[in-house]
Image (cartoon, rainbow, N blue to C red):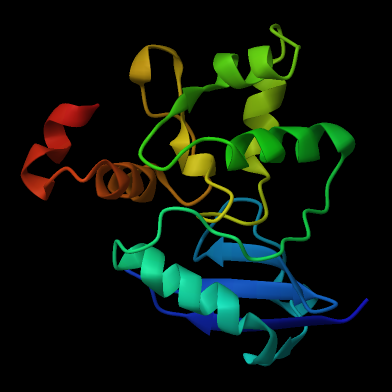
Length: 167
């Protein structure tokens, strides 16, 4: 297993992209909860990340709403099923943990869904920020609630002046 990484700037701070055997397997924000140790990221080399970087830049510019870079999602079967559900949440929309649990056929598993969501290794592209608590409340986000709120406002096309009234 060969790992490489690079760091890019974003409106939400530096992002560390990690590839395993040439496929994107991690996208981490600074101070992100469940961020692996730096020494596990491999050599610093931007070579395998061209398409991911291009798509992230287009997303942050407001010109891309759906990513199509190949992903390597390493986790338990349940985690991978939750992360697949995240990929199905359209840009600008949200789902609750309970709705994701229902979609998985496990209506009592909203806490387990929340735990799997928190361990998502590819933030932004696998849009765990689109998951909210019951009643629309902002709840845990590995990158911090401020970033989550900013990403949701960005995707909603709402101006910064209305941020305080969204949640």
